[in-house]
Length: 261
Image 1: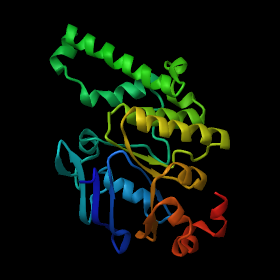
Image 2: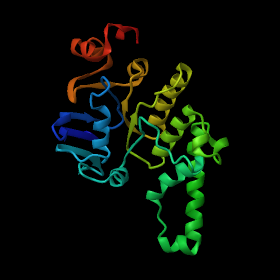
Image 3: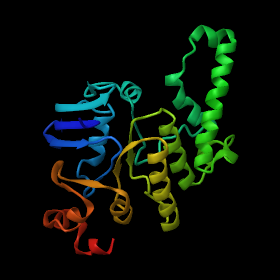
Image 4: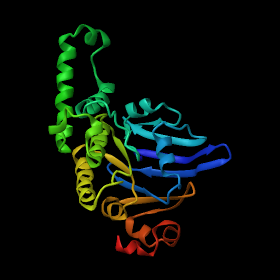
């Protein structure tokens, strides 16, 4: 049983079909890449998986506690509650909140205290909030952001904002993490560091990861399998070495210089 199963997923906007009959699966613990040209439908697929868009047809199933849960049509916060979290191609932090509060706010979907405890400031509320702060600081420390916990998110350099967004996604305690171009805008040194971080958090947090990325050196290095979209349709899937030599993929996206990646 795969952890995440997508079956014949389609999304149309009027007369435009952005995602067409896409099927894929991701097993627990895998790190899978999703690549393709700009406009191929990659982010639309992520938006379907995370509840931003409602599928026109098809299904999205997430295994949880030995049962298959249908995610198609759920609101984004319900999808996150089920265990699927994401980052965005265009960073979407709470820019006027502190770095620490950006992480804390993601944790509140899992709090155990009730509204009355918070309103009356009972011990249960204070104890759990102290636990959340400690966990948030641990996540920030992973990304070397703990010393900036009180700064506004908008004041962080671009690369650190990327790291904060990943930390915020981890704060929801997902079983599946979707990363939408996490290396976008990063220099080679930052990308190399990010590659190491992704591999580490996968093991540390027992994550399954689906990754959209244009940096082929990153994709080929860390992904065990790769799916390729073009014009909303799946044109290939396989191991990195298979994708690297696939004629359809080279023609549609990679180009002959892929072997240099």
